[in-house]
Amino acid sequence: MRKIKKAVSVLLVGTMIASSLVGCSNKKSTSDSKDSSSKKSVEITMLNSKGEIQEGLEAIAEKYKEKTGVSIEVIACGAGESPFQKISTMYSAGNPPTLAILDTTDVKAIAEEKATDLSSEKWVQEMNGMTTDVNGKIYSFPLCIEGRGIIYNKTAIEKTLGKDFDPSTINSYDSLKAIFDKLKAKGMKYPIVISKEDWSLGAHQLQYVYETQTGDNAGAQAYIDKLKAGESIADNKRFDEFIKTFDLLKENNINNPDPLAATYEQDPIFLADGDAAFWFNGSWAWPNIKEAGGDKNEYGFIPYVLGNDTSDFANTKIQASPSKQVMIDKEKATPEQVQAAKDFLNYLVYDEQGQKALVDDCSIIPVAKNNPNAPSDPLGKSIKDAMGKDGIFTASAIVPGDHWSVLGAEMQKYLAGQSTKEELAKAIDSYWAAQK
Image (tube, rainbow, N blue to C red; front, side, top):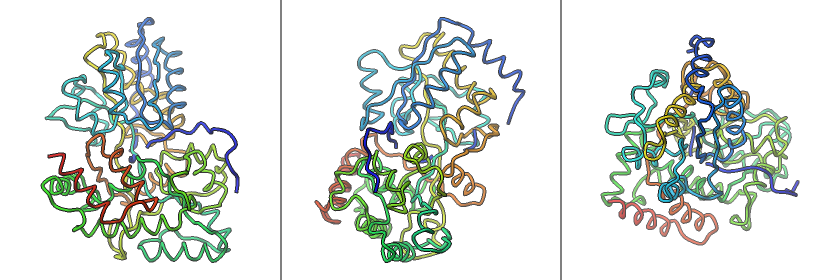
C-alpha cells in the first residue's frame, strides 16, 4: 500500500453532481467575445468553491486574458470552508467577487439581493431547462452536470477476482455485499474507501434519503417539507435502507479502525493502487485519481444501492444534475466589470476555445447543449454514457447552506461509531425542526 509522502494538490468538493456545455458560428462568437471584452484595463475576480478545478479555472483565466486582455483572478475557498460562509464574509468585508461559483442553495439565498439578473442572456436557451428559477428570474449560470455514486476500479476488481466484472450486476444491497465478500475472500481486506469529509457524508451521502423518495426535485422538496413539519426521518423506509447500506460501507472502509483520521489526499491513492476497489465520490474526483497515478485503470460508477428491489431506480440509476452555479455581483461590481463577467460566461458557452477549455481543463460535463466536447476522463464518460441510456435520476435536494457541515458532523460521529442510528435520526430531526 502506497502512502502519500507529500501533500497532493487535491482539493475537495464536493455535491453533488454534477450536461453537455449548438455550435454557433464560432468565428463570429470568437470575435464577439474578443470585441465585447476588449476593455484591456478591466479586472474581475471569481470565487471558486469547487476546489478540484482550481488549476483548470486558472488555466482558462490565462487563456481568456491572452484572448481579450481581461484579467480574472480565481479565488479559492479555503479547505473545509463552506461556500456560503465564504461569500457572506466577502460581502460583509465589502469586497465580494465579481463572479462566484456557489451551490444552488447559496445562490437562491442571496440572489435577489446580491446578484445580477441574467434572465435575458442568450445562453439561457442552451441550458436544456436546467437553470435555477428564483421567483421567476434567473440569477445564475449552471456551470456543470455532476454525478455521484460508488466509483469502481474495474482493473483492480478483475485482477483480484481473476475474472471479468460486470458493474450492472451490482443492483441491490445483497449484490454489493456479495462483491465485497468475494474481494475479501481473495485478500482485499477492505474493499471500499469512505472519505471523512463533512460534505461527502452530510451532503453527498445523507441526501440520498431525500433525493430517492421519487428521484426528482419535487419529491425531494416534498419530503424535506415533511421533515420541517415534524415528521421523523426514522419513520422513513429510505432512511432504513440508507443506514443499512452505510453500515456496510463503513464496515468495509479501508480507513478503519480510525475513519476520522483519513485524509482526502490518501483516499484516491487507495483506489488507484488497487488496495481498495471502490470509493464513494463523484465525477469531480477524476483529477484526484489521476494525480494519484491511477489513470491507466478502468473506472466507472455503480449506484448507491438502497434495499434489494432490483427494479428500484435507486439501484439501477446514478444521481446526476446541474451542480455549481455562477452568479455575477451587482452590489460592488462596476458596469464594466458586470459586462466583462457576462462576456466571460458567453465565452464558455459560445467560443470554441472556451467550450473546449471547460471540458478539457476542468474535466467537467458542461450543461450547455451546444458544447460539442465530450469528457475525456472515465468518470465523466460514465456519467455522460448513463445520461444517454436513461441511466440517471436528476433529483438534487435544495438544503440550507449549513446542512453539510451540521449534519456532516453528525454523520462523522456515526461513521466513527460514536453515535447510534437512533441518535443520528434525532439529530437530523432536530436540524430540520429548526428550519421552520
